[in-house]
Length: 70
Image (cartoon, rainbow, N blue to C red; front, side, top):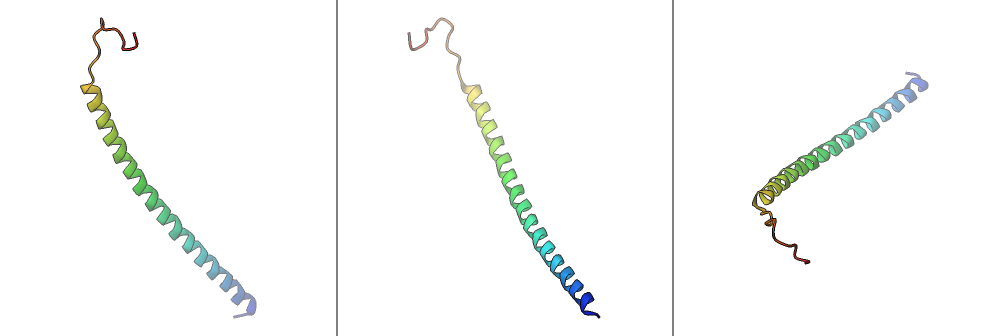
C-alpha cells in the first residue's frame, strides 16, 4: 500500500468513526425527545380529562342573580 493510499484509508476510517459517533448521539437525542413527547401527551390527556371534569361540575349562576361586584 502506498503512503497516499494509507493516508486516504486513515482519513476514511476517521470519517466513519465521527459519523458513527454522530449517529449514536442523534439516536440518543431522538430517544429522549420521544420519551418527552410521550410524557407531554400523557400530561395533556390528564389535563383534558380534568378540564372536562371541572366543566361538567361547574354550575352556571342563575340569570336573575346580580354579579358579585354590584
